Length: 123
Image (tube, rainbow, N blue to C red; front, side, top):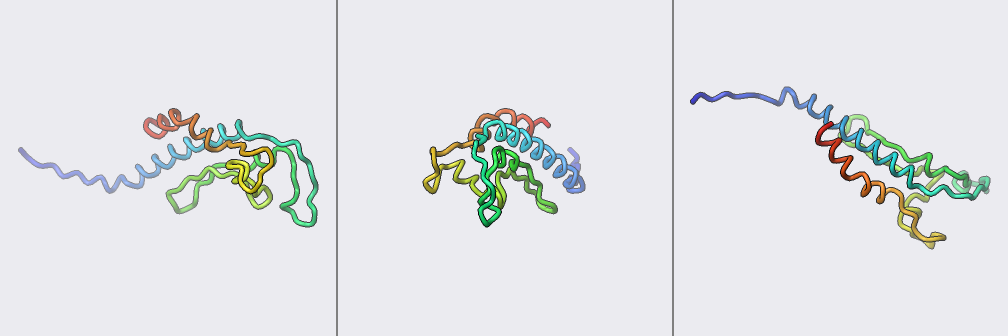
């Protein structure tokens, strides 16, 4: 029996590129599900001195996005920003949040589990 040595390390970059592309596609599915579950409030309020005090309907939903860090093997689904800082309170109902928790990210992840697995495994 003869021995054949195959060096697959030369393909690592291509394997990683394909894998990260699949992860990003799966993250897009989670993002879309989170956007569909995100509650749009009815409060409209101009900024009271500081920009983060402004409220507008749909502001949180508009911030749900997929971010792929440049130079890192990392894909994130993010909600909120400096202006819409209350994503954690909305998800978990912390800090005396009026009306309790209104989760959108965790249910989106749970609902898309099968689809995300099939995207990652099969492309």
